Amino acid sequence: MNDEIPIVDAHHHLWDLDGGPLHYPWLQDAEPHAFFLGDYAMLRRSYLPQDYRHDAAHHRVVKTVHVEAECARSQQVEETRWLTEMNAKHGLPNAIVAHAWFHTSDAEEILARHAEYPLVRGIRSKPVTASAPGDSRPGGPGSMQDLKWLAGYRLLAKFGFSWDLRVPTWHLEEAAAVVRANPDIPVVLNHTGFPWDRSAEGLALWRRGMRALAECVHCTCKLSCLCLRAAPWDYQDNRRVVLETIDLFGAERCMFASNFPVDRVRVSFAQMFDDFKRMTEGFSPSERRLLFHDTAARFYRL
Image (cartoon, rainbow, N blue to C red; front, side):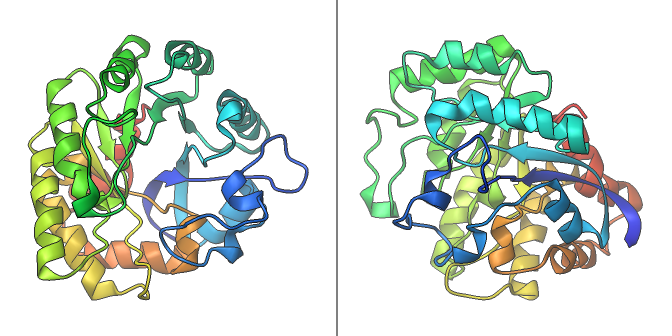
């Protein structure tokens, strides 16, 4: 075991596709769904705590955060219940980021039901977004400008929940406006803001959004999901993205995360965290502790 640094894995998933209580349309429906990394056939099997521990065995993972895995939305509270049972039986996950729509009439009811489970720390609710930069139509139902969506979003403060923000790069500046206007809701940006386009133009767009979010002191960033649709895991290319993100947010507002098993389509858990450690060799021990453990432990109250 590579155990010199304790790790809080700030973002992973579990699912039971072999008679489990939940249905995952994107994994179990006959017709494959559009997936941002392309072919995901290897993910269409159960992934349970023992599978996670096998993948993570090379590193010293001490606690984990489970993020909703897109089960059927009628079962969003049932997912929280099942994950609570996984914690009782297997000791992980140690915190849950559940799902609730913000713009629906039952938003407050669903949030209240999640709040009955002590492991729930936050909510991941994906707003309606455009499929490409030029296709954005702000203001539609379920978007970050929808008044019903904004009202539901503000309910997070009532329940003491954080928001796991997941939008494509071309929506980061819009998201920053929402985050800026609600300083009482802690936010963590998922997946390094999705820098899928590594061209100079693509990174310039990503950088503008990342800077806007970094200016919001209550916004943190997950250094995760650096995978690209049509390219293998590239240490040097990913390193520049990671280091620039840490420069923008600071180590005290960045946390490493595996996004397993999803990222396994491009890289092993062992190599990913070996590379994360290599990328940060120039940082002080206290900064590395923040990046691998303390920031996530503070944000998710572990």
